[in-house]
Image 1 (cartoon, rainbow, N blue to C red):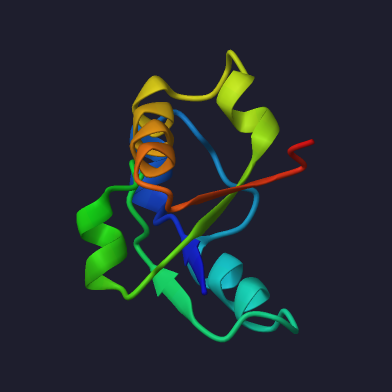
Image 2 (image 1 turned 90 degrees about the horizontal axis):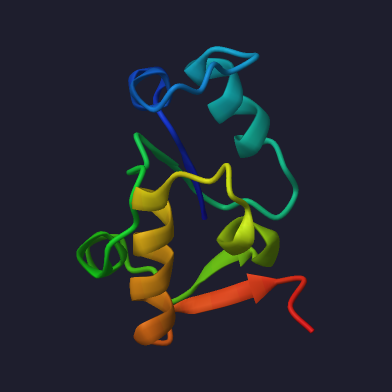
Length: 93
Protein backbone atom coordinates (compact mmCIF):
# COMPACT_ATOMS: atom_id res chain seq x y z
CA UNK A 1 0.00 0.00 0.00
CA UNK A 2 1.47 3.33 -1.05
CA UNK A 3 0.18 6.84 -0.37
CA UNK A 4 0.40 9.51 -3.07
CA UNK A 5 0.17 13.20 -2.21
CA UNK A 6 -2.28 15.32 -4.16
CA UNK A 7 -0.96 18.19 -6.23
CA UNK A 8 -2.71 20.62 -3.85
CA UNK A 9 -0.99 19.17 -0.77
CA UNK A 10 2.39 19.36 -2.47
CA UNK A 11 1.90 22.95 -3.63
CA UNK A 12 0.75 24.03 -0.14
CA UNK A 13 4.00 22.62 1.22
CA UNK A 14 6.24 24.24 -1.39
CA UNK A 15 6.86 21.03 -3.34
CA UNK A 16 6.49 21.01 -7.07
CA UNK A 17 6.13 17.55 -8.59
CA UNK A 18 7.67 16.59 -11.91
CA UNK A 19 4.49 14.70 -12.90
CA UNK A 20 0.81 15.41 -12.26
CA UNK A 21 -0.99 13.50 -9.52
CA UNK A 22 -2.74 11.10 -11.91
CA UNK A 23 0.53 10.10 -13.54
CA UNK A 24 2.29 9.65 -10.16
CA UNK A 25 -0.56 7.43 -8.98
CA UNK A 26 -0.38 5.30 -12.12
CA UNK A 27 3.40 4.97 -11.88
CA UNK A 28 3.07 3.69 -8.32
CA UNK A 29 0.09 1.46 -9.16
CA UNK A 30 2.18 -0.39 -11.75
CA UNK A 31 5.00 -1.21 -9.34
CA UNK A 32 5.27 -4.93 -8.78
CA UNK A 33 4.89 -4.89 -4.98
CA UNK A 34 2.13 -2.30 -4.73
CA UNK A 35 -1.34 -3.73 -4.09
CA UNK A 36 -3.17 -0.50 -3.37
CA UNK A 37 -2.66 3.23 -3.91
CA UNK A 38 -4.06 5.68 -1.40
CA UNK A 39 -4.77 8.95 -3.17
CA UNK A 40 -4.65 12.22 -1.22
CA UNK A 41 -2.26 10.87 1.39
CA UNK A 42 -1.93 13.30 4.30
CA UNK A 43 1.20 15.39 4.70
CA UNK A 44 1.35 14.42 8.38
CA UNK A 45 0.70 10.78 9.21
CA UNK A 46 -1.48 10.13 12.25
CA UNK A 47 -2.52 7.00 14.10
CA UNK A 48 -6.12 7.80 13.14
CA UNK A 49 -5.20 7.71 9.42
CA UNK A 50 -3.42 4.38 9.92
CA UNK A 51 -6.43 2.90 11.76
CA UNK A 52 -8.90 4.15 9.14
CA UNK A 53 -6.88 2.53 6.36
CA UNK A 54 -5.92 -0.70 8.12
CA UNK A 55 -2.20 0.13 8.13
CA UNK A 56 -0.04 -1.59 10.73
CA UNK A 57 3.39 -0.18 9.88
CA UNK A 58 4.85 2.68 7.85
CA UNK A 59 8.24 2.39 6.14
CA UNK A 60 10.13 5.68 6.17
CA UNK A 61 13.64 6.32 4.92
CA UNK A 62 15.66 6.81 8.10
CA UNK A 63 17.51 9.77 6.56
CA UNK A 64 14.22 11.67 6.45
CA UNK A 65 14.12 12.06 10.21
CA UNK A 66 17.47 13.87 10.29
CA UNK A 67 17.14 15.80 7.03
CA UNK A 68 16.99 19.53 7.89
CA UNK A 69 14.96 20.12 4.71
CA UNK A 70 12.17 17.78 5.81
CA UNK A 71 9.04 19.58 6.93
CA UNK A 72 8.70 19.68 10.74
CA UNK A 73 5.00 18.78 10.60
CA UNK A 74 5.83 15.54 8.80
CA UNK A 75 8.58 14.79 11.33
CA UNK A 76 6.10 15.16 14.23
CA UNK A 77 3.93 12.55 12.54
CA UNK A 78 6.87 10.18 12.19
CA UNK A 79 7.80 10.67 15.85
CA UNK A 80 4.23 9.81 16.87
CA UNK A 81 4.37 6.61 14.82
CA UNK A 82 7.70 5.66 16.41
CA UNK A 83 6.24 6.08 19.91
CA UNK A 84 3.45 3.64 19.10
CA UNK A 85 5.60 1.07 17.30
CA UNK A 86 3.96 1.68 13.91
CA UNK A 87 7.22 2.71 12.25
CA UNK A 88 9.72 0.69 10.29
CA UNK A 89 12.80 2.68 9.36
CA UNK A 90 14.33 1.75 6.03
CA UNK A 91 18.11 1.82 6.11
CA UNK A 92 18.38 1.74 9.90
CA UNK A 93 21.45 -0.04 11.28
